[in-house]
Length: 400
Ligand code: FES
Image (cartoon, rainbow, N blue to C red; front, side, top):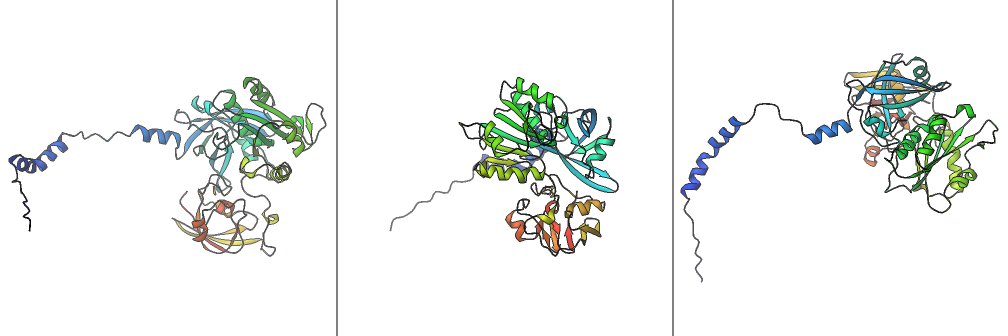
Protein backbone atom coordinates (compact mmCIF):
# COMPACT_ATOMS: atom_id res chain seq x y z
CA UNK A 1 0.00 0.00 0.00
CA UNK A 2 1.26 3.44 -0.97
CA UNK A 3 2.03 5.77 1.91
CA UNK A 4 0.32 9.18 1.80
CA UNK A 5 2.33 12.08 3.14
CA UNK A 6 0.24 14.90 4.58
CA UNK A 7 2.23 17.94 5.54
CA UNK A 8 0.74 20.10 8.25
CA UNK A 9 2.09 23.64 8.09
CA UNK A 10 2.70 25.15 11.51
CA UNK A 11 0.71 28.32 12.19
CA UNK A 12 2.95 31.21 11.20
CA UNK A 13 3.72 34.08 13.51
CA UNK A 14 2.01 36.52 11.15
CA UNK A 15 -1.19 34.44 11.10
CA UNK A 16 -1.26 34.46 14.86
CA UNK A 17 -0.77 38.22 14.99
CA UNK A 18 -3.48 38.83 12.38
CA UNK A 19 -5.91 36.63 14.30
CA UNK A 20 -5.14 38.37 17.58
CA UNK A 21 -5.69 41.80 16.01
CA UNK A 22 -9.02 41.09 14.31
CA UNK A 23 -11.17 42.48 17.10
CA UNK A 24 -8.96 45.49 18.04
CA UNK A 25 -8.72 46.46 14.36
CA UNK A 26 -12.49 46.31 13.99
CA UNK A 27 -12.96 48.45 17.09
CA UNK A 28 -10.50 51.01 15.67
CA UNK A 29 -12.39 51.15 12.36
CA UNK A 30 -15.76 51.60 14.14
CA UNK A 31 -14.33 54.41 16.24
CA UNK A 32 -12.82 56.16 13.21
CA UNK A 33 -16.10 56.04 11.23
CA UNK A 34 -18.26 59.15 10.85
CA UNK A 35 -21.23 59.37 13.25
CA UNK A 36 -23.31 61.45 10.80
CA UNK A 37 -26.36 59.83 9.14
CA UNK A 38 -25.71 57.62 6.13
CA UNK A 39 -26.39 59.75 3.03
CA UNK A 40 -29.33 58.64 0.89
CA UNK A 41 -28.14 56.98 -2.31
CA UNK A 42 -28.73 58.95 -5.51
CA UNK A 43 -30.61 56.02 -7.03
CA UNK A 44 -33.07 56.05 -4.10
CA UNK A 45 -33.54 59.81 -4.45
CA UNK A 46 -34.29 59.38 -8.16
CA UNK A 47 -36.76 56.54 -7.46
CA UNK A 48 -38.63 58.76 -4.98
CA UNK A 49 -38.75 61.64 -7.47
CA UNK A 50 -40.12 59.40 -10.22
CA UNK A 51 -42.52 57.38 -8.04
CA UNK A 52 -43.55 59.51 -5.04
CA UNK A 53 -46.13 58.01 -2.69
CA UNK A 54 -48.11 61.22 -3.00
CA UNK A 55 -47.69 64.76 -4.36
CA UNK A 56 -49.09 67.85 -2.63
CA UNK A 57 -50.26 70.18 -5.38
CA UNK A 58 -51.66 73.71 -5.55
CA UNK A 59 -53.98 75.05 -8.29
CA UNK A 60 -52.01 77.86 -9.93
CA UNK A 61 -54.17 78.63 -12.95
CA UNK A 62 -57.63 77.78 -14.29
CA UNK A 63 -58.31 77.80 -18.06
CA UNK A 64 -61.94 77.83 -19.33
CA UNK A 65 -62.37 75.31 -22.14
CA UNK A 66 -66.04 75.83 -22.92
CA UNK A 67 -69.30 75.25 -21.11
CA UNK A 68 -68.68 73.17 -17.99
CA UNK A 69 -65.08 72.27 -18.86
CA UNK A 70 -61.97 73.66 -17.19
CA UNK A 71 -58.27 72.91 -17.22
CA UNK A 72 -56.56 73.14 -13.83
CA UNK A 73 -52.82 73.83 -13.80
CA UNK A 74 -51.21 72.19 -10.78
CA UNK A 75 -47.79 72.90 -9.29
CA UNK A 76 -46.07 71.18 -6.38
CA UNK A 77 -46.54 72.93 -3.05
CA UNK A 78 -42.86 72.42 -2.17
CA UNK A 79 -41.71 74.09 -5.42
CA UNK A 80 -40.15 70.88 -6.81
CA UNK A 81 -41.07 69.61 -10.28
CA UNK A 82 -43.88 67.04 -10.29
CA UNK A 83 -42.95 63.46 -11.17
CA UNK A 84 -42.11 62.79 -14.84
CA UNK A 85 -44.54 60.59 -16.80
CA UNK A 86 -45.37 58.96 -20.13
CA UNK A 87 -47.79 60.91 -22.35
CA UNK A 88 -51.22 59.29 -21.83
CA UNK A 89 -50.88 58.50 -18.11
CA UNK A 90 -53.20 59.74 -15.34
CA UNK A 91 -52.95 60.96 -11.76
CA UNK A 92 -55.37 59.96 -9.00
CA UNK A 93 -56.68 62.82 -6.85
CA UNK A 94 -57.38 62.07 -3.15
CA UNK A 95 -60.48 64.00 -2.14
CA UNK A 96 -63.18 64.44 0.46
CA UNK A 97 -66.62 65.95 -0.03
CA UNK A 98 -69.92 65.75 1.88
CA UNK A 99 -68.53 63.20 4.36
CA UNK A 100 -67.14 60.88 1.64
CA UNK A 101 -63.45 60.16 1.28
CA UNK A 102 -62.62 59.11 -2.28
CA UNK A 103 -60.30 59.29 -5.30
CA UNK A 104 -60.74 60.35 -8.92
CA UNK A 105 -58.36 59.52 -11.79
CA UNK A 106 -57.73 62.25 -14.39
CA UNK A 107 -55.55 61.95 -17.49
CA UNK A 108 -52.80 64.51 -17.73
CA UNK A 109 -53.44 66.89 -20.64
CA UNK A 110 -50.01 68.52 -20.31
CA UNK A 111 -46.87 67.00 -21.81
CA UNK A 112 -43.99 65.22 -20.05
CA UNK A 113 -41.84 68.25 -20.90
CA UNK A 114 -44.33 70.45 -18.99
CA UNK A 115 -43.65 68.33 -15.88
CA UNK A 116 -39.96 69.20 -16.25
CA UNK A 117 -41.06 72.85 -16.44
CA UNK A 118 -42.89 72.47 -13.13
CA UNK A 119 -46.57 71.73 -13.83
CA UNK A 120 -49.33 69.25 -14.65
CA UNK A 121 -52.61 70.10 -16.40
CA UNK A 122 -55.80 68.12 -15.81
CA UNK A 123 -59.04 68.90 -17.61
CA UNK A 124 -62.36 68.24 -15.87
CA UNK A 125 -65.75 68.18 -17.58
CA UNK A 126 -68.80 68.71 -15.33
CA UNK A 127 -70.97 65.63 -15.49
CA UNK A 128 -74.54 66.39 -14.39
CA UNK A 129 -74.87 62.97 -12.71
CA UNK A 130 -71.31 62.94 -11.37
CA UNK A 131 -70.63 63.21 -7.66
CA UNK A 132 -67.41 65.22 -7.96
CA UNK A 133 -66.82 66.64 -11.48
CA UNK A 134 -69.68 69.19 -11.40
CA UNK A 135 -68.69 70.33 -7.92
CA UNK A 136 -65.03 70.61 -9.00
CA UNK A 137 -65.77 72.72 -12.08
CA UNK A 138 -68.05 75.04 -10.10
CA UNK A 139 -66.02 75.33 -6.89
CA UNK A 140 -62.30 74.72 -7.31
CA UNK A 141 -60.32 77.96 -7.32
CA UNK A 142 -56.75 79.23 -7.57
CA UNK A 143 -54.73 78.49 -4.43
CA UNK A 144 -56.73 75.36 -3.49
CA UNK A 145 -54.57 72.43 -2.46
CA UNK A 146 -55.01 68.90 -3.82
CA UNK A 147 -53.17 65.68 -2.99
CA UNK A 148 -52.49 63.35 -5.89
CA UNK A 149 -50.67 60.11 -6.70
CA UNK A 150 -47.63 59.66 -8.91
CA UNK A 151 -48.48 59.27 -12.63
CA UNK A 152 -50.16 55.92 -13.22
CA UNK A 153 -51.57 53.74 -15.98
CA UNK A 154 -50.47 51.92 -19.10
CA UNK A 155 -52.27 53.97 -21.76
CA UNK A 156 -49.18 55.25 -23.55
CA UNK A 157 -47.26 54.53 -26.74
CA UNK A 158 -44.74 51.71 -26.53
CA UNK A 159 -42.57 51.19 -29.59
CA UNK A 160 -41.97 47.48 -28.90
CA UNK A 161 -45.70 46.78 -28.73
CA UNK A 162 -47.49 49.39 -30.87
CA UNK A 163 -47.33 50.11 -34.62
CA UNK A 164 -45.62 53.23 -35.99
CA UNK A 165 -49.07 54.66 -36.85
CA UNK A 166 -51.78 55.01 -34.20
CA UNK A 167 -55.45 55.76 -34.86
CA UNK A 168 -56.68 57.53 -31.73
CA UNK A 169 -60.45 57.33 -31.24
CA UNK A 170 -61.95 59.57 -28.59
CA UNK A 171 -65.10 61.35 -27.51
CA UNK A 172 -65.71 64.41 -25.31
CA UNK A 173 -63.13 64.82 -22.55
CA UNK A 174 -61.50 61.54 -23.73
CA UNK A 175 -59.32 63.84 -25.83
CA UNK A 176 -57.09 64.67 -22.82
CA UNK A 177 -54.51 61.82 -22.99
CA UNK A 178 -54.25 62.38 -26.75
CA UNK A 179 -53.49 66.07 -26.22
CA UNK A 180 -50.58 64.97 -24.04
CA UNK A 181 -49.41 62.49 -26.73
CA UNK A 182 -49.77 65.10 -29.53
CA UNK A 183 -47.71 67.59 -27.49
CA UNK A 184 -45.05 64.95 -26.79
CA UNK A 185 -44.83 64.17 -30.54
CA UNK A 186 -44.59 67.89 -31.43
CA UNK A 187 -41.91 68.38 -28.76
CA UNK A 188 -39.89 65.41 -30.05
CA UNK A 189 -40.36 63.20 -26.97
CA UNK A 190 -42.49 60.60 -28.79
CA UNK A 191 -42.01 59.30 -32.31
CA UNK A 192 -45.17 57.94 -33.96
CA UNK A 193 -47.88 59.13 -36.33
CA UNK A 194 -51.14 59.96 -34.58
CA UNK A 195 -54.37 60.14 -36.58
CA UNK A 196 -57.03 61.42 -34.20
CA UNK A 197 -60.71 60.73 -34.83
CA UNK A 198 -62.40 62.98 -32.32
CA UNK A 199 -66.15 62.72 -31.77
CA UNK A 200 -68.16 65.65 -30.38
CA UNK A 201 -71.88 66.46 -30.41
CA UNK A 202 -71.58 69.93 -31.96
CA UNK A 203 -68.77 72.21 -33.11
CA UNK A 204 -69.06 74.23 -29.89
CA UNK A 205 -68.36 71.04 -27.87
CA UNK A 206 -64.95 70.43 -29.43
CA UNK A 207 -62.26 70.78 -26.77
CA UNK A 208 -58.70 71.97 -27.53
CA UNK A 209 -59.71 72.82 -31.16
CA UNK A 210 -57.12 75.57 -31.66
CA UNK A 211 -54.41 73.66 -29.76
CA UNK A 212 -54.94 70.62 -31.99
CA UNK A 213 -54.61 72.76 -35.13
CA UNK A 214 -51.36 74.25 -33.81
CA UNK A 215 -50.00 70.82 -32.82
CA UNK A 216 -50.70 69.49 -36.33
CA UNK A 217 -48.41 72.20 -37.73
CA UNK A 218 -45.77 71.95 -35.03
CA UNK A 219 -45.53 68.17 -35.41
CA UNK A 220 -44.68 68.48 -39.12
CA UNK A 221 -47.62 66.30 -40.14
CA UNK A 222 -47.11 63.55 -37.54
CA UNK A 223 -50.39 64.56 -35.83
CA UNK A 224 -53.62 64.77 -37.82
CA UNK A 225 -57.08 65.44 -36.38
CA UNK A 226 -60.44 64.58 -37.92
CA UNK A 227 -63.47 65.99 -36.12
CA UNK A 228 -66.69 63.98 -36.23
CA UNK A 229 -69.95 65.69 -35.18
CA UNK A 230 -72.95 63.59 -34.15
CA UNK A 231 -75.62 66.28 -33.66
CA UNK A 232 -74.83 69.03 -36.15
CA UNK A 233 -74.55 69.12 -39.92
CA UNK A 234 -71.45 71.00 -40.96
CA UNK A 235 -69.60 70.37 -44.22
CA UNK A 236 -66.25 71.15 -42.59
CA UNK A 237 -66.50 68.00 -40.45
CA UNK A 238 -67.37 64.32 -40.71
CA UNK A 239 -70.94 63.52 -39.64
CA UNK A 240 -72.44 60.89 -37.32
CA UNK A 241 -70.48 58.44 -35.16
CA UNK A 242 -66.97 57.03 -35.62
CA UNK A 243 -67.83 54.12 -37.90
CA UNK A 244 -65.66 51.53 -39.65
CA UNK A 245 -66.14 53.62 -42.82
CA UNK A 246 -64.60 56.72 -41.22
CA UNK A 247 -61.78 54.71 -39.61
CA UNK A 248 -60.95 53.10 -42.97
CA UNK A 249 -61.04 56.48 -44.73
CA UNK A 250 -58.33 58.01 -42.51
CA UNK A 251 -56.27 55.04 -41.26
CA UNK A 252 -53.13 54.19 -43.27
CA UNK A 253 -53.97 51.83 -46.15
CA UNK A 254 -50.42 50.63 -46.71
CA UNK A 255 -49.21 49.76 -43.22
CA UNK A 256 -50.54 48.18 -40.01
CA UNK A 257 -51.79 50.52 -37.31
CA UNK A 258 -52.67 50.38 -33.62
CA UNK A 259 -55.95 51.72 -32.27
CA UNK A 260 -56.04 53.67 -28.99
CA UNK A 261 -59.46 54.53 -27.54
CA UNK A 262 -60.50 56.90 -24.77
CA UNK A 263 -64.07 57.93 -24.08
CA UNK A 264 -67.32 56.89 -22.42
CA UNK A 265 -68.42 53.27 -22.09
CA UNK A 266 -71.12 53.74 -24.79
CA UNK A 267 -68.45 54.83 -27.28
CA UNK A 268 -66.38 51.69 -26.56
CA UNK A 269 -69.41 49.46 -27.05
CA UNK A 270 -70.14 51.10 -30.42
CA UNK A 271 -66.57 51.34 -31.73
CA UNK A 272 -65.75 47.75 -30.68
CA UNK A 273 -68.32 46.47 -33.19
CA UNK A 274 -66.95 48.77 -35.90
CA UNK A 275 -63.40 47.50 -35.28
CA UNK A 276 -64.66 43.92 -35.55
CA UNK A 277 -65.91 44.78 -39.04
CA UNK A 278 -62.40 45.93 -39.96
CA UNK A 279 -60.98 42.67 -38.53
CA UNK A 280 -58.33 44.51 -36.54
CA UNK A 281 -56.36 42.15 -34.32
CA UNK A 282 -57.25 42.52 -30.62
CA UNK A 283 -53.58 42.89 -29.68
CA UNK A 284 -53.46 46.13 -31.67
CA UNK A 285 -56.38 47.70 -29.77
CA UNK A 286 -55.76 49.56 -26.50
CA UNK A 287 -58.44 51.20 -24.36
CA UNK A 288 -58.07 53.72 -21.59
CA UNK A 289 -60.10 52.72 -18.55
CA UNK A 290 -63.32 54.56 -17.86
CA UNK A 291 -63.84 54.06 -14.12
CA UNK A 292 -66.73 52.19 -12.55
CA UNK A 293 -69.32 50.49 -14.73
CA UNK A 294 -72.31 52.81 -15.11
CA UNK A 295 -75.10 50.28 -15.58
CA UNK A 296 -73.93 47.02 -14.08
CA UNK A 297 -77.41 45.41 -14.19
CA UNK A 298 -77.21 45.27 -17.98
CA UNK A 299 -73.78 43.62 -17.96
CA UNK A 300 -73.50 40.08 -19.34
CA UNK A 301 -74.11 37.49 -16.61
CA UNK A 302 -75.59 39.85 -14.01
CA UNK A 303 -78.16 37.82 -12.00
CA UNK A 304 -81.81 38.82 -12.39
CA UNK A 305 -82.68 38.13 -8.77
CA UNK A 306 -80.17 40.57 -7.16
CA UNK A 307 -81.70 42.75 -4.42
CA UNK A 308 -81.42 46.57 -4.52
CA UNK A 309 -79.51 46.97 -1.28
CA UNK A 310 -77.18 44.92 0.95
CA UNK A 311 -75.13 45.40 4.11
CA UNK A 312 -71.34 45.31 4.20
CA UNK A 313 -69.23 44.75 7.32
CA UNK A 314 -65.96 46.59 6.63
CA UNK A 315 -62.90 45.57 8.62
CA UNK A 316 -60.12 48.17 8.91
CA UNK A 317 -57.26 48.75 11.33
CA UNK A 318 -59.74 50.79 13.42
CA UNK A 319 -62.21 47.93 13.81
CA UNK A 320 -65.38 46.73 12.07
CA UNK A 321 -68.11 49.04 10.79
CA UNK A 322 -71.41 48.02 9.17
CA UNK A 323 -72.54 50.10 6.18
CA UNK A 324 -75.30 50.05 3.55
CA UNK A 325 -74.49 49.31 -0.10
CA UNK A 326 -76.55 49.67 -3.27
CA UNK A 327 -76.23 46.69 -5.59
CA UNK A 328 -75.70 48.96 -8.64
CA UNK A 329 -72.71 50.68 -7.03
CA UNK A 330 -69.29 49.18 -6.50
CA UNK A 331 -68.16 48.02 -3.06
CA UNK A 332 -65.57 50.82 -3.16
CA UNK A 333 -68.22 53.52 -3.66
CA UNK A 334 -70.25 52.14 -0.72
CA UNK A 335 -67.16 52.23 1.51
CA UNK A 336 -66.25 55.78 0.43
CA UNK A 337 -69.83 56.99 0.84
CA UNK A 338 -69.68 55.80 4.45
CA UNK A 339 -66.63 58.05 5.01
CA UNK A 340 -64.17 55.16 5.32
CA UNK A 341 -60.81 55.87 3.66
CA UNK A 342 -59.95 53.04 1.25
CA UNK A 343 -56.99 52.92 -1.15
CA UNK A 344 -57.77 53.24 -4.88
CA UNK A 345 -56.29 54.68 -8.05
CA UNK A 346 -57.67 53.49 -11.41
CA UNK A 347 -61.23 52.65 -10.14
CA UNK A 348 -61.50 50.21 -13.05
CA UNK A 349 -60.23 46.91 -11.63
CA UNK A 350 -56.82 47.15 -13.27
CA UNK A 351 -54.15 48.56 -10.93
CA UNK A 352 -54.86 46.31 -7.91
CA UNK A 353 -54.31 49.19 -5.49
CA UNK A 354 -57.68 48.59 -3.77
CA UNK A 355 -57.10 44.78 -3.42
CA UNK A 356 -59.08 43.56 -0.38
CA UNK A 357 -60.03 40.25 1.25
CA UNK A 358 -63.62 39.10 0.84
CA UNK A 359 -64.24 37.24 4.10
CA UNK A 360 -67.93 36.45 3.49
CA UNK A 361 -70.50 36.90 0.71
CA UNK A 362 -70.78 37.04 -3.08
CA UNK A 363 -69.89 39.78 -5.54
CA UNK A 364 -70.41 40.32 -9.28
CA UNK A 365 -67.38 41.19 -11.41
CA UNK A 366 -67.51 41.63 -15.19
CA UNK A 367 -64.97 39.74 -17.24
CA UNK A 368 -63.59 42.96 -18.79
CA UNK A 369 -62.95 44.58 -15.39
CA UNK A 370 -61.55 41.58 -13.54
CA UNK A 371 -57.89 42.51 -13.24
CA UNK A 372 -57.17 40.07 -10.38
CA UNK A 373 -54.30 37.58 -10.44
CA UNK A 374 -55.26 33.90 -10.58
CA UNK A 375 -54.02 33.35 -6.99
CA UNK A 376 -56.14 36.27 -5.74
CA UNK A 377 -59.26 34.76 -7.31
CA UNK A 378 -58.46 31.43 -5.69
CA UNK A 379 -57.84 32.84 -2.21
CA UNK A 380 -60.83 35.20 -2.08
CA UNK A 381 -59.38 38.61 -2.84
CA UNK A 382 -61.40 41.22 -4.73
CA UNK A 383 -60.84 44.65 -6.21
CA UNK A 384 -63.70 46.60 -4.54
CA UNK A 385 -63.73 49.19 -7.37
CA UNK A 386 -64.91 46.55 -9.86
CA UNK A 387 -66.95 44.32 -7.47
CA UNK A 388 -70.71 44.71 -6.97
CA UNK A 389 -72.50 43.13 -3.97
CA UNK A 390 -74.80 40.16 -4.61
CA UNK A 391 -75.31 39.41 -0.90
CA UNK A 392 -74.42 40.87 2.48
CA UNK A 393 -70.62 41.05 2.62
CA UNK A 394 -67.74 41.03 5.09
CA UNK A 395 -64.66 42.73 3.60
CA UNK A 396 -61.24 43.47 5.03
CA UNK A 397 -59.64 46.52 3.39
CA UNK A 398 -56.01 47.68 3.58
CA UNK A 399 -54.93 50.98 5.08
CA UNK A 400 -55.47 53.97 2.76
S1 FES B 1 -58.43 51.07 -7.80
FE1 FES B 1 -57.31 50.06 -9.33
S2 FES B 1 -58.01 48.01 -9.12
FE2 FES B 1 -59.26 49.11 -7.76
